[in-house]
Length: 265
Ligand code: CP
Image 1 (cartoon, protein in one colour):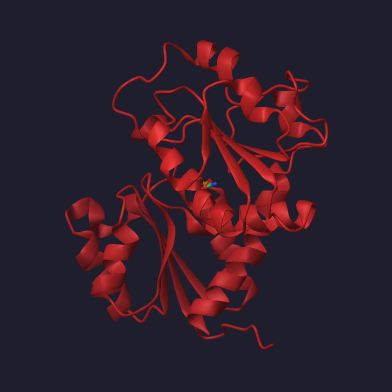
Image 2 (cartoon, protein in one colour):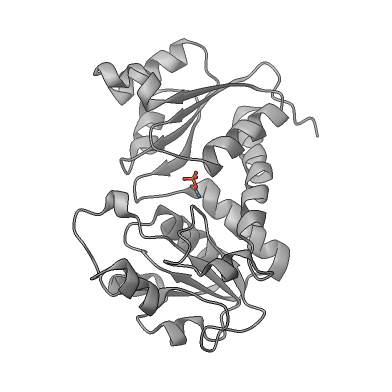
C-alpha cells in the first residue's frame, strides 16, 4: 500500500487547547509526507471577528486538502462539512464527539484484550460533558462490549441506560469485574455550575487508587488525558503497569495516520 500524502496540505485548525490530539495529527501527517499548517485561535483572524465559516472557506481557497478541526461548539465539524468540499476531520467538538480519540482507545483495548465482545468496560467520571465518553459508547457498543457508566449522579444521566448500558453511582459495583476502566477528568471548562461539593469529595468518592476495593488486579486503566493526578486518578495508578495511558497516546499517531490516509489519499 502506498501511504504517502506527498503534496497534500493538511490544516490543523485547533480553536481549543490540545496537546495530544494536535501533536498526534501533526506527526501523523508529517509521517505521511503531507505539508502541515497549524492554526491556533489566538494567531488567526478569528480574533478580529471573522466567522468560523469564513475562516474555513478561506483555508479551502488557499488550497487545503483537509481540515482537522477542534472547536468548543458541538456540531461545528458537521456544519463545516456541509459548507466546504474538503474533508473535515473532527478532533473534538464541545461535549459532542471525539471520534479519533475513541478509535485509538478501541485500538488500544483490542491490542490488550482482543475481541471486545462481552468484555466489561467501565467509563468513570464526568460523562455529561465528555465527548470522549460519547464517541467511545458508540464504538464499544458496535464491538459488543458491556458498558457501565459511573460517577456522581449529577454527571452521569440515568437516561444513558436507553442505549443499553448500565448506570451505577456505586463505585465498587462499577469497577468490580471490569476488564478495563476508562477514567475521565472533570470538564470544568464546559460546566456553568458546580455538580459536586468539592474536588476533595469527588476524589474520595470516585477517585481511583491502586488496590481500590474489588478492582480486578489485571484490570486495565485508560484515560484520554490530560490527567488530574490526585483527583480522578491516584498518581501511583497512573504510572503502574495496569495503566495504558501512554500507550493510548502512542497509538494515537498510527490511528490518525490511518484516518488521514483514508480521507486524503
Ligand atoms: N485526549 C485529548 O483530546 O487530549 P488533548 O486535549 O491534549 O488533545
